[in-house]
Length: 209
Image 1 (spheres, rainbow, N blue to C red):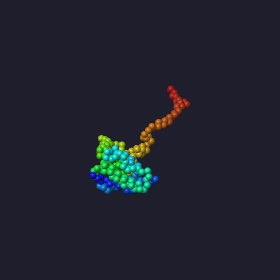
Image 2: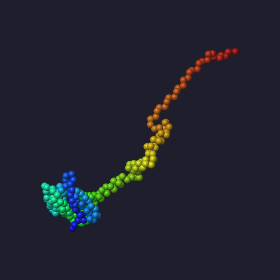
Image 3: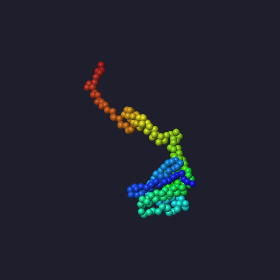
Image 4: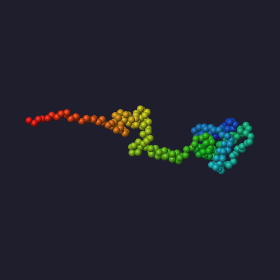
């Protein structure tokens, strides 16, 4: 049964002294196209990665010979052979027309297709995310450190002073005696010195009559 993924080799070009073959993978269901370019040696590497996955349907030897002379005729012949090869491996890896997600990761990457999402891994990630979110929630009605940070940021955006700024303003308004911290010892009071009174120069005497 044919796959819903149509793969074509549309031509070749020279880039930095290397021949690159253009590949277009089109999903006939969604009509999405993905374009890639690969050297001939990369097709051989792809085949080596697919043999353990698609054996014995896929032969161990790469079916297209590597010519020592890469003339224009050889390159044009490779275009049609590489297209036939890719269509064959896609049909082997994706026997159902509506199940292109079963393509092996090496083939998906080679064709530039999005990475398939494993349903079990996706469910596991969702469960872990939910558990983490619940762990960060408020406990017994008390906000977490993340909540406090969010509230502080929002308050600063509206010009509301923070608790530290309010405390600093209150302390600045207090009289020196009420400021927190070590207090200076009170200044000693001046001692008033008194001089003893001088005795009178003469005492009043009374005569006995």
